[in-house]
Length: 108
Image (cartoon, rainbow, N blue to C red; front, side, top):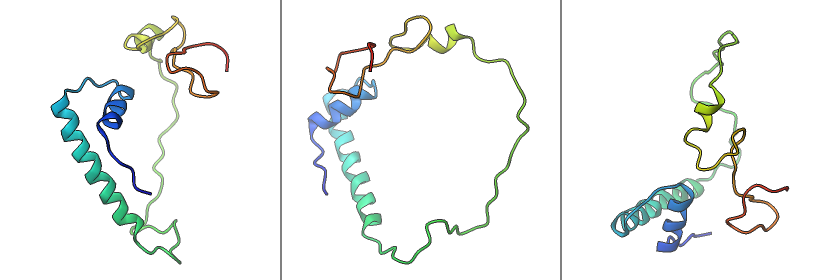
């Protein structure tokens, strides 16, 4: 399934990423997105029939560290750069249930 990278799609991705981009930057990003998708398409064309998805080219093991309690980030600092908060939690747009794009908070 091919995805058409349009100016509107680039602007939507920029808005969701909270990036302010110019028209010139949008054209450049459109080209980058197309290259990324063509790169991914090359991987999708590979025949992986019969290949165990858990096989690695080198042996790997988990490296664990001791779980030691540490001081946590103060709530004010965590919420300092949030686009919207209620003083205790991050406030984000509802994404389930067909809510309007600008609808924030509320019950799910």
